[in-house]
Length: 147
Image (cartoon, rainbow, N blue to C red):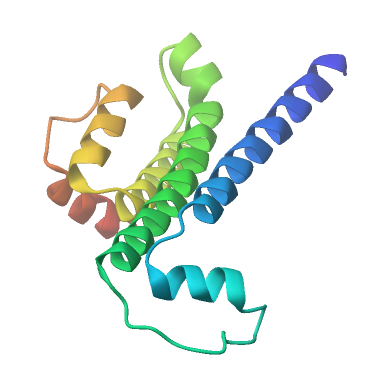
């Protein structure tokens, strides 16, 4: 029972740290004039008193925020994928049919969250032996047909 609570507390701490990292990253990136005016001179549901045109810094900040959220969600999915197959797959060397189905579901989620290059790095680290090496685009088609 103590081991269960240790794992539960560790998982809660992990998710809290990822959430904290994501929120701090979003808050500390000011962006351009429009973004920083909206964030720091408006209030929830109320637009700031004046508007400004978006500039390249607003676009960069927006892209950064999107990437941070996307990668934090992918990190949580990858952690779930790893823990769901760790005992059978990594310790005993094989996984059941149901575990493979769940693994493919999580891989499909990762395919939608990551770029092709990012996914190929993650997919290589999973270490499945039953598949030939295919591109991320081809794998996306194969897994999408499965579901």
